[in-house]
Image 1: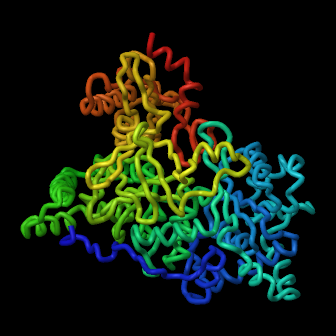
Image 2: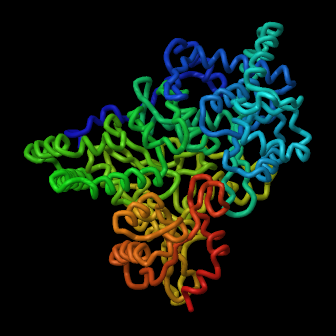
Image 3: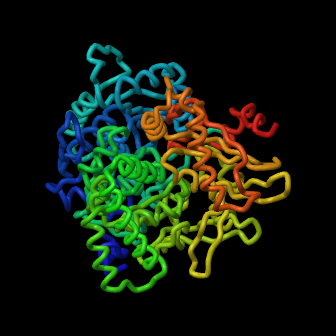
Length: 618
């Protein structure tokens, strides 16, 4: 592999690259060391605007001053209800610099969820992105007497707002400038007073079972983990990252914001979630972290584009990806690559593979990182065949993100890698549940000591709820969630995630849920990929008027059956899907069936679509 990809740039970095024992101290040390250098960029109205470390410091200083003016004290909680934008990061650091606790709320959450999260976290200041998010806050404000002020980032459409409880970000900064002029040393006193053992952030779980739980992370755990990340895969000031996943989720907060803060890599913010494919081609990140849904969408786009290409282009791709696959097979087997195969791969890149990488936007990527959900091994291998290593990491909110990671020098598709060197990972000898212990493990659930005791045992082991296996090289593999393993009426144990991952490799299937616990055979609930299935319908003269009619079309049913047949061929008869139905409503993150990270909630889906499921067993 080293003959083709320069792995020296992906080697672990063990030294401390930035001092500071709290996130706040680390940030201000970064400002002192990197002042005029660019840290973040954001595209607005078609223009990329750069923020230097000094410019962010000016904004953070004023926002923190405004918070102190409003009576925000050390230990108080402020929440941020916004999409992933630069102001999110600035507010987060301002809160932490004041000695406060920072809590993120998903922008897709309903007003009732905003109320619950603000109540549970004892929020006193609420930052909201715009008029849409402000409406949610105002709807439940009467039930939240603890909130003293709502701060709005973007006041477009709110020019005539006259509400003493609401101010703009510009007004907050103005208050901060005046406060800092009167109390010039207070902010740095606050920063120095923050202790490693102080609570820093709350990250609420997505609540697939019951109410969301507020995972508590201290400064010490965040600093410990972010330094540990650099020993998994190092990055530095030369790297360009793309920031687009929700910042209230542990993946982007740690792997994006805080890891970038630590390493000085540049953070580029997309315009909105819909422009990710366009923005990634503009940014061409050198390090790209995303969830499997994103990698699947890129692959689907390439497959659809190929169908529209001419026969010469299709033949060029087929030959080129064949060479790439040959290389990938040797890399994965740890075998040497002869000079003739290297020469063929150079031709393959020039002929087709470099164009595919540019189409996606990964032509400058040193490596790709996937996590937050299982990914099909064939997809990892496809990206490797393009010449870009894809490294799978595994972790959870409670482990502060990644707890295991696949090393670039030993990629094993289907594996989540060995334990990261900053924590211990083992299997429970009886249940085979994956357990994690280390300085990255969270401090418990806010206001829920009994749930904390269930999750962290007396010896400090975090019970993850994932069932795993480990091979003789110490590489772990997720078998399934403990609560998701299916035992059919015939007593056969089935791992639904393996079947579901194979199905999601199809360009026509966005998500799938296997059903069959205590039932005679396996059935399937499918969420189709609207864009690709619509294109199939248009190309094949299939009539449809809306999303629902598309899912009911016999030709579309036949298309999905073909995809299921392809996957069924890989599994034993007892593990094969006998019947399926297509969800006839297009789901988004606002729908209760989906988690904020766009995964179908198995239990809720089973309950909500019980009549359709029963019909498949009649």
